[in-house]
Amino acid sequence: MNYLRRRLSDSSFVANLPNGYMMDLQSGPRPTPPSSTSNPASPATERRTPPSLPPQVPASGSALGSAPALTPGGFLSSFSSVVKTAQLAQNAAAAAKASVAVAEAAAVAPAKPVIRKPKILLVIDDLHTDWAKYFRGKKLNGEYDIRVEQAEFSEINLASYMNTGCMIDMQAIRGGTKVVRSFKPDFVLIRQHAYSMTPGEDFRSLVIGLQYGGVASINSLLSIYNFCSKPWVFSHMVKLYHSLGPEKFPLNEQTFYPNHTQMVTTPTFPVVVKMGHAHAGIGKIKVENELDFQDITSVVALARTYATSEPYVLSKYDIRIQKIGNNYKAYMRTSISGNWKANTGSAMLEQIAMTDRYRLWVDSCAEMFGGLDICAVKAVHGKDGNDYIIEVMDSSMPLIGEHVEEDRQLITDLVIKKMCSVLLGINTPQPSAVKPQTTQPRRAQGGHRSGSGSPSQSAQGSPQRARSANTSPSQAFQPGPIPPPAATGPGSQKQPPQLKMLTSRHLFRKVKLPLDFLVTPP
Image (cartoon, rainbow, N blue to C red; front, side, top):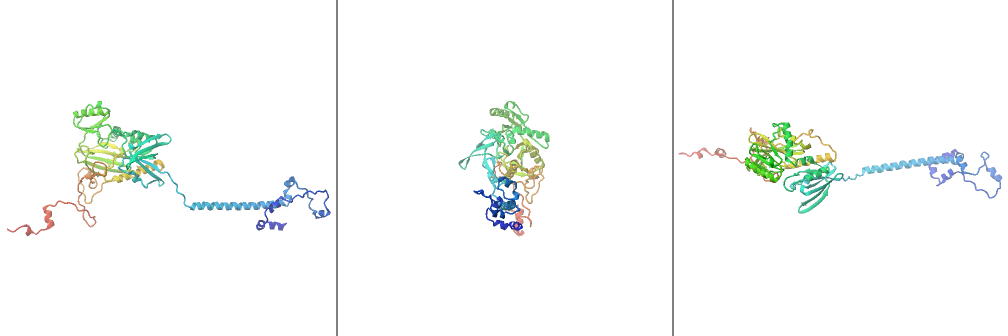
């Protein structure tokens, strides 16, 4: 028996057994078929039966089920179950190793790039600026591409839904071909006036539709809608005037007339009358006396709109302070065409130094209507030496000066930061924590400062070359002052030659003629 146990414990022996052999051992001895006769067992059979074992009883289901341990198949059954358990464990371990190998192979293999749907940016501006060029190659958080759709207010229409947002229908002419597209914008950059009293330029309904669809924008749609009325904006500047005082915020005095019936008289002349809501000097008239004022009253009655009047300031130059995000610039514009409107005709444009006084003006106005990301303040410096703030502009302000490309890039970066914050929830640093950037005019080598109080002379360096009063950078340059000659020395850079006026003394020094040549003998 011990030999059988040792033999059966050998795994190689069990593996070499024929199929079904172990199952036959588990089932026990087969029952003997009944004999056709009822003869008793032969003496030989009785002699072969061991005396110690009881006589075999016919197999039955109850006997086999109740006493399996008494049969020789009980031991083999337990042994085969152990073998099967070991085989199952080996198979499970092999399957686990195979799954781990598959996982490692999948990790080593390069992952398929996840294709993300690009974010759609709607830029409302004219075609003079191709904004797609500035956003090309840029992504939101390095994951989402930016698809730029540019159109004017007159080229778009929309429908807004409470649950699905805003759907834009654009019909524009590009290169002589009509382009029709429909899309759902994720963000809007507004660089165009939303309202003007000029026929066909009232787009306030589109601003309402964008707000209804929950589309974020720069500037905010709340501020865009509020800027559709200049007297309404001026009323908020009046609050700043009363809170800061006339010394810090010198706002020009203004009178509002809701209709022509209240335009009876004005205390002083000359005055500037502004009718309704218009831009670029349209609807502004200079009135010299009371008779002309009554004539303008009849024109306001015909226009059926409101009007404002303000004292005319004999200006020396105009001042413009702009703010794009945390970047500040200041400009001085002097009319050279003799027109009382500095933004009409030709003008000299120069960049001047950014002072704390100017920064206070634009920062105070940037807090209106929940915050203005892009804004500019216009003021007039009178010949009496005082400054007068006359207007504030929003994101539709024109870009001027020689830093137009830099300003467009600043607007691009500002839009990307705003889109990351609104669409992806990536918070940017607070404006108070970011150091403001101020672009100062460059100082020429060898230049000197003057004691005059003019901003162009108090700035660090000579004023920039002038440009036309029109805001398009393609306009021709106006002649400006010739900068002083650069300092000479071994470490200085070579400067282009400058024109000089030579006197007779300079001529003698240059030629060094002999004295006997100049003085003839008697």
